[in-house]
Amino acid sequence: MKIKSKLWIEVDGKPVFGRGRRFLLEAIDKYGSINQAAKEINISYRKAWGYIKAMEERLGFKLIERQTGGRNGGGAIITDDARAFLKKYELLEKGIQELVDERFRDTFR
Amino acid sequence: MKIKSKLWIEVDGKPVFGRGRRFLLEAIDKYGSINQAAKEINISYRKAWGYIKAMEERLGFKLIERQTGGRNGGGAIITDDARAFLKKYELLEKGIQELVDERFRDTFR
DNA sequence: TCTGCGTTATGCAGTTATTCCATAACGGAT
DNA sequence: ATCCGTTATGGAATAACTGCATAACGCAGA
Image (cartoon, rainbow over all chains, first blue to last red; front, side, top):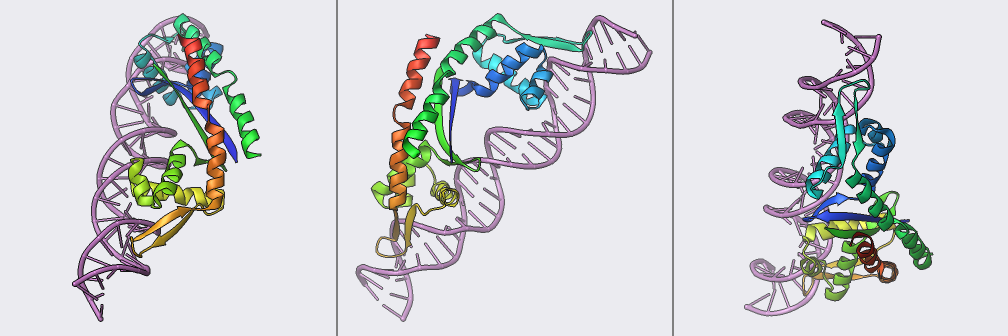
C-alpha cells in the first residue's frame, strides 16, 4: 500500500503543467533535444511533442525554441519564459511529496 | 490558472482509494444504499459498483455488506473495517489541499 | 399465489482518451 | 547528391471509461 500525490496547474479546466511536463522541460534543457529528452524520461517523442504543443497553446507563450535540420539534425532549447515558469513550479512542488509521505506514515502505520 | 492536487492510495500499482471513493463510502454510510449514494455524488450506479468491486479486490477485505430484495428492495451498509479505513483516509487528506493552495499563492502570485 | 417495487449485480456496446506506428520535411556535413 | 538525426503530424490501434439494458432478489400487499 502506497500513497501517491499529484500536483498540476490548469488553465480553463485543462491540465497545463505537472510533474511529467516538469521533467520533460528539465530534460530538454539538459540535452538540447526533444527527442533525447523524451528517451531520458521514457516517453515517446510523439507524446512529448503533444505535451509541448498543449502547454504552449494553453499558457499562451512559447516554451521551446526549435530548429529542424542542420548539423546534428536540429535541436530545441527552452525559452527564458519557460525557465522562469519551471523555477516557480519547482518551488511550488518542493516539500509537498515529503509532507504527504510523512502524513501517510503517521496515520496508516 | 488554478492549482489542483490529488491524493490516492495504491496497491500493486493500482488505485484503491481517493477522494471520489471516499465520498462514495461516506454517502453509502449516510443512505444505506449504493444507488442513493451514487445519485448523491453524481456518478452512475454502474460506476459506484465498479469502484466497490475494485476496492474490495485490492484491499482484500469487505467494505460493503449488501442485501438484495426485501422490503425496500435491499440496501448496503459499510463494514467496520471500511469505517476504520475511511477515518484514516480523512485524517490523511485533511489540510493537504489548503497547504497546496497556500503554496501556490506564495509562488505564483 | 402472483404481481409490483426498489435494490444489487453484470454483460456489453458505444464513446472517449491515450498510445504508438509510419512518414514527411529540414538543412548542414560529407 | 546522399546521409543523418532531428522536429512535425496524421491516423491507426489500443486501452480506459461510461452508460444502457436487463436479470435476480425477496418483502409487501392484493
